[in-house]
Length: 137
Image 1 (tube, rainbow, N blue to C red):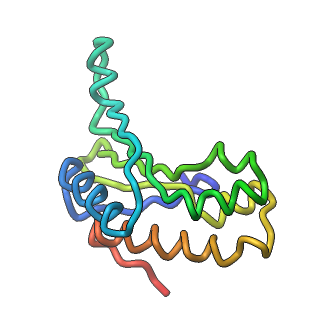
Image 2: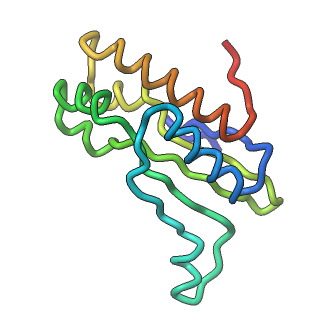
Image 3: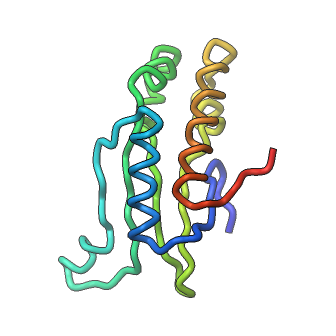
């Protein structure tokens, strides 16, 4: 099922290793990891089961601020988030909101086009490092 604005990439690694690689790649790209949310653990805490499902919230204040200077409500989609999850057949995926979609959603124009492209390039590099999946040019 395709979801507008959501990019989903398969990972060559298990969920724990994918998340570790993701965090490492975020930091190597000069971004900060602000928080992690482990939905599987939260589910277990209330007596429910959920396959591995974990979110990392990350970003760079310089890039995000440019978006919010143009349209402050863009802050609802920033900092960036990435979801690492394992499906019912055991495959692992990394999903995130496409920065182009975030910009379009908030009506951001040419004033932030360079920032959008920079964010896309950074996120694509991070995803490749985390999953070993390459993007087509």
